[in-house]
Length: 476
Ligand code: FAD
Ligand code: MLT
Ligand code: ZN
Image (cartoon, rainbow, N blue to C red; front, side, top):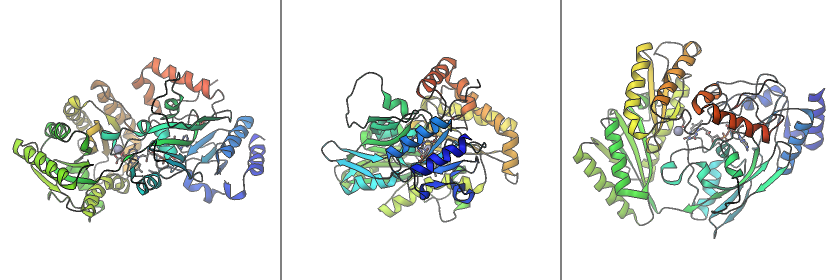
């Protein structure tokens, strides 16, 4: 039996604490954060170094066992959940959580894949430097998962997404070799960019075991404000006003609809909008300054005064302490938690060109409401990046599991066809995983999809790395 021979080989390689095979021990690794996907596994393996990862992959290759890499298991597309066969292994990188080096001159940090994002931010901050990747799951997601999904978050507007923050990678390939690409170079035009191939590949092309990341000077202060806006066009005008006047000081621009904040208040009554009754749109704006507190504060006040004068903002409050700024951010980040508590919902993580944003929302809401008049649309997102989280929840009083099972395909079709019509993307930052695999070919186009398939076949000819994620496994 391949599986028992493989298990024996894993046991010869790892300590008992590094192999979980009892169902209760494996359970947390076998379903996703949203509890939408449930799988089974032969074992969960917890290597502690890159050499062990390479050995595990070699064993898997020899015995034709497929493996599912996993970091913090906070992904929102089911990419880290094994299938139902019980024949796959979950490869958790959690134990590989060492910071290997912090280079002050080069402003880089070299970290293992299982480092929690927040611990990297903290290590950089101890040296007065900033690692700017920031997202609601930062206390539990791992950098390997962030890179594998090319995570976005709230600082993309200023610093880019995970891809933009990574200079080098160490990767274990599908045949168990180690690619030593841990270079801290900001320029390196030596042929094809392998690093960029692995970033965003969701564990289907290689296992990221370590990375070199860019660091930035830590700003001396941040000013966070909540601003009420009357409409989408006004919100976009506000964004462009801040871009023009605050230029690179603008580090966050998050949009929340009244419905999304009402849901947050319902689930977390302590989270109240300081703007009073929820306006149509509440925008969280963050400025980060390297000069002085007064400089940034004067700038924020001047821009907000102009916005109020122009009527593109109707009310605003500037946080007067770090603690208050944190409560603004918590309100924003609790939307996801509120949604999860309210019941399963149909999530769509999309980007739309800002010039088409309003027309997209109007047209999509209309088509959706014609079919489902009572459905709840819970929208929010990283407006500064044109990234909208367009979420559909069952009508109040309707069982969300039953509603979703019956309507998920049609709701996705309605929204994704509108995304196509308005020139957007069906995945802005969460990835494809299992959730969007069936929609990818139509969206990406046959040629691009075929090229992706060729890359997959070239790098993982026996399809042992996270099969049936991103791309459907080929039936021979
Ligand atoms: P996992 O969920 O463990 O894995 C995700 C994918 O990466 C899987 O396909 C897995 O196989 C693969 N993978 C993991 N580690 C490796 C590795 N070492 N090598 C190769 N492949 C690997 N995402 C955003 O982009 N922006 C947000 O603002 C954001 N906010 C969130 C807020 C909340 C509350 C939650 C729950 C999630 C949020 N996410 C967000 C989604 C999620 O946190 C990100 O996708 C994150 O990057 C996943 O990291 P992880 O370590 O949890 O990866
Ligand atoms: C966010 O922006 O909060 C995350 O992407 C999570 C989500 O979409 O719910
Ligand atoms: Zn997001």
